[in-house]
Structures are given as C-alpha cells and as structure tokens.
Amino acid sequence: MTVPRNSELVETILYRAADTVGDIAAPAIALFYQRYPECRALFDHHGTLRVQDLENDMVSQALYCLMNWCSSPGEVEIVLLGSVPHHADTLNVPPDFYRGLLMATAEVIADSIPAKNREERAVWDALCRELCAVIEQGSEHLLNRVAGDPAPARLRHP
Image 1: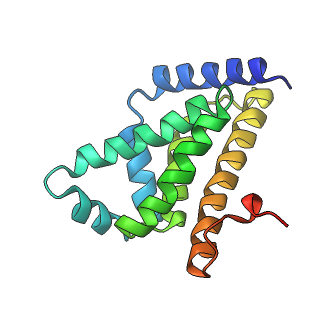
Image 2: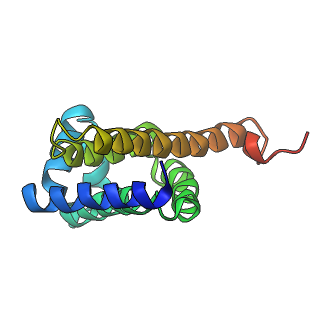
C-alpha cells in the first residue's frame, strides 16, 4: 500500500475518532492508568499543580506521532528517539510506560474504526507496530549507554 493511501486512511480514522469520541485525552489517560496504575504517581510528581495539563500534553505528543507517522516518519523518529531516552534518564519514566500511553491513545482511536473497515484496521495496526519498534530503538539506545556503548546498534559501524 502506498504512503499517500496510508496517510489518507489514517486521516479518515482520526477524523472519525474526533467526531465519535471527541477529545480523546480523558479516555486515553483513563485506559493508561487502568493498565499502569503506578504511573499516576509519576504524573502527580512531575505535573505538581498541572497534572491534567501534563496528561493532555502527553496524549497530544502520542497523537502527533500517530498523525504524522505515514507522511513524515523521519520526523516522528527524531521526536521519539530523543523523547524516550529523555523521559527515562531525566524523569525516571521507563520506555514501557511511554509505549503504554501511546498505545492507550491508539486504542481509543482504534475503537472508533468500524469492524467492516479491515483496510483501515490493518493500516492502523501496522502504524502502531512501527511506532512501538521506534520506541524499542530508543530503549535499545538506553541499554547500550548503560553498557558503555553510546550508539544504538543500528548506528554502529562494523
């Protein structure tokens, strides 16, 4: 399937979710906390008096990645490969939690895809797998740094 077709399908999915779900931040955060209840304390700690703003910002970041992956994967890679290690190093937020919020956001949107729209679901599922792979690359970078190797495996020269 072509990039323009994938972008078109993702746009259709996102518009439908906006029409049927509305603001996805609250349901995405609720699903995330249901799966990762220990993260509420991290948001309370880092958000201090602006927890809801922080939650909304993180859902917006996830939505940005989902919206732009098909049309600008390099840009989204830059965001994720910088953000995942930053969250782990500076904020003590493991990559699993980062992935969990992205996937909770994606699932709220996916729930708006009608069952009969198999092509949309296939594109959405592939997009999610690809984003998870980029987050995994960010995790690998962290593990390599801990082991004393500053470069991710895919950037090392033989």
